Image (cartoon, rainbow, N blue to C red; front, top):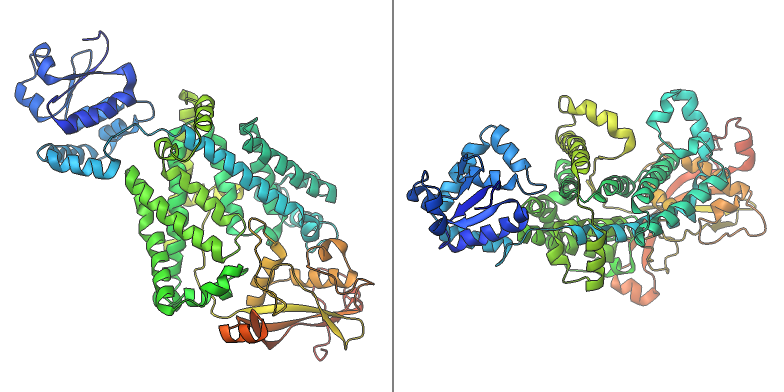
Length: 615
């Protein structure tokens, strides 16, 4: 017996015992000695043969003996990153009793334990490693950041530049006036320092470069800190145009990524917690909303043509038979409300959950333009696998590089990861509770409020209510108030003969906001007033957001916005006319207005009062 080392004594004739001992030996390396009782029993005369035969025995160097479940968890306390089990055994009420009952139950049924083990973990149980998983995730996550900043860079001036729709300088000044010094805490943004057009564009360039550094694995950790700070700044500066769930998801993922580089398994688990919370809430809100299309499983009969920006495939998906669309709706709810619970189970069941989520997200990518949203969700599924599973898909040289770059978490990294978990998990629980009850849990509500400005643990809920119609705003301009020309957007439905387009991973944020604006009215979307004013001005940065400018010789004298009901053309109409869409007028969304109307209003942020009898 090795001096100074604890010893685990097990039944050497038991196949399932050897199965688990091999796994434990891999976890603990040389920290524990493993011996079958058939050869070790004589060295421990104080332990009876019956005890050796009935349960594993863990003997400390000082002679202290642990048996059964206690031996298992005491053994794991010698494995890096797994001491929490022993802590739970000692301190969590009922945990020790339940563990010992389960151990005794399975010890008497070793054939059942063998079948369950191989079903859940496979024919060979190996220690799960996440060096390759983390390395691959960070490289691909850097690419998501690059796409997000590049997409933002080509439209930022039109959205929030000084001649944009919602100038960020005016917004921050108003916030400072209203909130005082609290504005800096409630709206954390680097653009408090400089909100010029040069700074706005430069920030997107810096963000793309930092993302590339993560992709090529250079200065990864400082690059991740910079990316988080930059994107958080744009989310607050972007106002209505940066208020989407994928923006907050990117920030939450990016926040955890800053700690992933430490190599702690705790951070891997926190990513699983995020995947569960994000998908589970997506399912919960659908049921809690009371929306009939989710309850009677007809949501997909509307989704493909009413979603914000369909892809070309969406038209074909909308032609599928009702029974298949009903089945697809049911499958969506099963994945979001049922399959996600497999995320916390052993590796094979986690893989099942990952495959279900990947399949669902792939179908969404085919039929809907959600920029990097679904790509990021699919990337998060990497954490539902381990290195052994991923190694089959990754070239050996990349695996070797990942292993060379891996960090073994020291005590400081582990303490930081634990502290992180004590924030992320409770606030995440409170986010779920908020969705279920519209209230906060005691104490956790205060913690949630404290961290909310950083957007590191967010509420989610996708398509809680399925829209069953598609109102579309069509903006028109005129030089004389009689001949009207349409402003065509790049991606949202407009010309009836133009099919839906692809724009993944780009997000045309104005096109998206036009979809939301059509669901309400001008009072719900005051930014529309500024958009109409910029069109009357002929703002180059705003016009650059559109597909084309129908007034190349100079801005129009009047603008207005008409509301239409859009639908996919049916097969017959499409074959006969070549149209992908059909529409009918629904009335006026924004009445005819001229630059003179705006000038009569001293504050351009106040909606003009155009003659309601015009247009």
